[in-house]
Length: 498
Ligand code: BGP
Image (cartoon, helix red, strand yellow):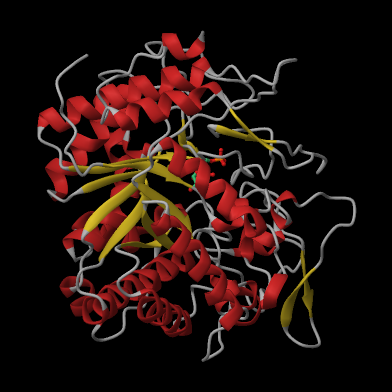
């Protein structure tokens, strides 16, 4: 046992996203969103086709492809049972997203789909009934497809109005019930996953067979700018409608734990510049202005966004209340190798100092100290409350003959990361909470598969779409329960394994 470090009101819990769990992709008036058109956000060719006559994109599903997210784990019909598992573990907070296109199916309606609101009434009320604080993402890669198909998505300034009609509707509707909001999941992924995260699609396309290749740097900065304005406007709305509530930014900050490969100054500077690609987003959304370094990028690449009068004042005035972020892994930068990104952060060279074996086939390196590093960088730069809204380990696992799922690797991952959060709190970081990514198995965002399982609860569904959808607790279930019960004090998991 070590000292009690975690504050009494620390928000222990877990996080999921509508599109990765709900299924029921066309139920009760919902229409497709951008994620419904792909199998994983790494996909470069969405299932869509250009209709020249009507000048609009249409869905073009491949009958031989399994789009697992369309049915997902059927949370839409099983949310009570699933949330009950979270209650059993003692969760204090539960994060999910609203599927924007359940509430505004086409995205450009003026009135919401009542059935969509009714569904989230039930979900929110159940979360609260089970003693958890709801944490809601307004769009977790879930822009209504019609907004891309017809308007080109976030490069179009009209998107600000559509989004803020949606945000105002849900703020009014859930006032007093939802305290923690975030606007766009991993908004910094707009640069790399411009279609799914950035919600950008050229209309009309120059090359209808490969529209994503047409998205320019300027498009990405324009989409980001429009999202900044929409985020700031949402904060303004929230402060008027529900002053007790808080709006956070949400970024993928594994991309901040980027280490230089060696002391070569070019690598040190290069690694730092790489982290700024992610920090740029919080610089704008938390400090309230565009940082100087980005203006050089705009100048040299001719990629400056069009900024409308009043935008900068709005961004300056309405900054985020807290920083929500995901952290999965660190990466190693060397100027000789091109850095890539995936849903877990950045991908560079292998780091020989990381000794825990990265689970295959995904090979995401395990680096708990990287989390402490990120927490400290963010504290130094912003001095804002920090909310770890995603951290987790995906494993390919199956129940044994006795229906037991041995996941000590997950327990170890949890233990090591919580130890580092404890250190960061001692360092002086203001950490509000810790949400495990995927407390129940769900569809992977990156690859669209079921095989990459994050849950404390197993779901019987496979990559080919087969499975009974039956739920089963894994060994880590009791371990996380113990951690929460002791407020992060008892991290011993040997007993649980036996
Ligand atoms: C983050 C996303 C999540 C989630 C997680 C793990 O980028 O916000 O939606 O899925 O990554 O990634 P993956 O599902 O690809 O393993």
